[in-house]
Length: 68
Image (cartoon, rainbow, N blue to C red; front, side):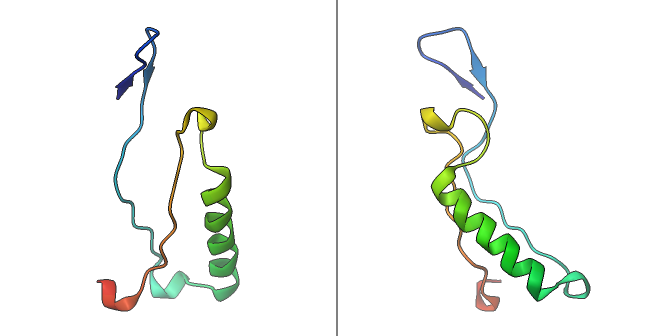
């Protein structure tokens, strides 16, 4: 929750890390490539509302088995 310094508006969001994964029985290489491409695009376009104010910035880091 963030209060805008010059107006009486509140913005809901968070700063942190999110990990997404799929169980092995639902994994499909074709869809994994599509999702990876969309996440890479989101690094440049940002996501959600308030993008011009700097909100919605993400960094996509591919998951490696050794990261577990």
